[in-house]
Every structure is written in C-alpha cells, then in structure tokens.
Image (cartoon, rainbow, N blue to C red):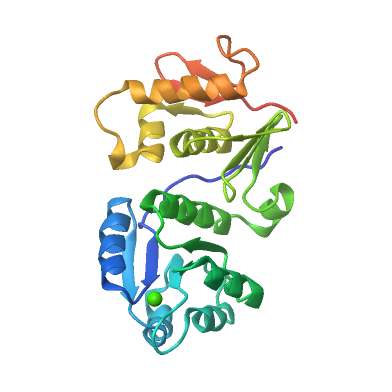
Amino acid sequence: TKRTYSMNQPTELPMVFVVEDEESFIEALDIGLKREGFRVSVAKDGAEALMMFDKINPDIILLDVMLPKVSGTDVCREIRKKSQVPIIMVSAKGSEIDTVIGLEVGADDYIVKPYRLRELVARIRAALRRSSLTPAEIDEVGVGTVSIGDVAIDPEQHVVTVRGVVTKLPLKEFELLYVLVANAGRVLTRETLIDRVWGTDYYGDTKTLDVHIKRLRSKIESEPANPTRLVTIRGLGYKYEKMSA
Ligand code: CA
C-alpha cells in the first residue's frame, strides 16, 4: 500500500483539555501529562468546560462523566454538535461507562478510574493519531489499524496480529513496533526511536532499545536470528521492511 502515516510531531505541543472535578486527579494529570509532552488546560465543572472549549481549541478532551453543573455526557453531546475533537470519557465505575456507551454520546474512547498514567497516555496518543488521518486513509486501513504483510497492529485494542495469531505485547514493545511499522521503508535512527517510544522515560542504558528489538523479532520474525522484517541498518538504526501485502 502507498499509504503514509505522518508520525511527525506538530510544531506546537498537543493540548489536552482535562475536565475533572477531583483535585487530586487534576494535580496528578497536570504534572503527568506535561511530563509526557502535552500542554494541559483544566475545567472543574461541565459549564466551565463548555465555556472554555471554543477559546482554547484543544487537541483532545479528557472528560469525567460525573461533573458538577453539567454532566460529562451532556458536555460530550454539546461539543459533538460543533466539533470532531477526540474525546476520552473517564469514570469512577465501569457501570457509568456502560451508560455512556449506551447513550451513544459520541466519545472516542473510555477509561475507568483508577487507571495508570501510561495507559491513559497510550490511549491519548492513539486517539490523536486516529484524528490526524484523512477520511480516505481511515477507509483504507480501518480506524487506526496499520498492517504490512502478515503483521497488523490495532492501536486502540493494543493488539498485534502476526500471521493470523493475536499477540499481546508489553506497552513499550507495542509502541516501538507501531512506530516502526507506521514508518515502514524508512530508516529510523536509534535516537528517533528512543525519543518517540521512551521520551524522557529513557534512563541511561542504551541496551534497552536493542533488548526490545530482540524481543519483537522473536515475536514477529519467522527466523528471529535472521530477520527479514525488522532489519538493522548498520551505523544508523532500524528499519521495518515495506513488503507487498
Ligand atoms: Ca467526578
């Protein structure tokens, strides 16, 4: 396929609009998301969220279901009347999420408290990637799914299918494979891969990347010792081979 994915960072950091009334969550999200490379704006009730939305023009909204003044589901409906901005709904119990899904308020994804920041960030990134695709690209690949040859990656479900077999990968292996496959045919330097997958979480040991590459090969290559998909480009980095489907 000729489809190309742009994994380039926008010049301006993406802004997450956090709509949340619990102070402890607001504080943790503000610190955690900024550390992950996002800008953060906060609204503490539904009415404030609707008032702020037009002014701040966020890239994605993290929207709590139970909010004072105007509920998260009503905020979601109102915003959907005028914008296709990605919205991730957040709730304290799974049953609230069931209600949100049942009401079909137009959210893109759902997450239940307590969640791990890493999981949230992975979902935010997946939603941002999906929203950057053109409708034609979405038609071609299905929402968010990237595939080359017999390896298919679904960033929403965090599922990789290799030769028809569904494989669950640890988060960093998953993100590494996603970046490589989405940029298939291009050489990615070690620095680029480390920056995209680990960012500021990458501490010291330069072997971490190689260890992850080795683990990925054991899962996707038919002959891991003699890789034909995830190849080393000596002195430069790694490349995922573009194969015909
Ligand atoms: Ca709440």
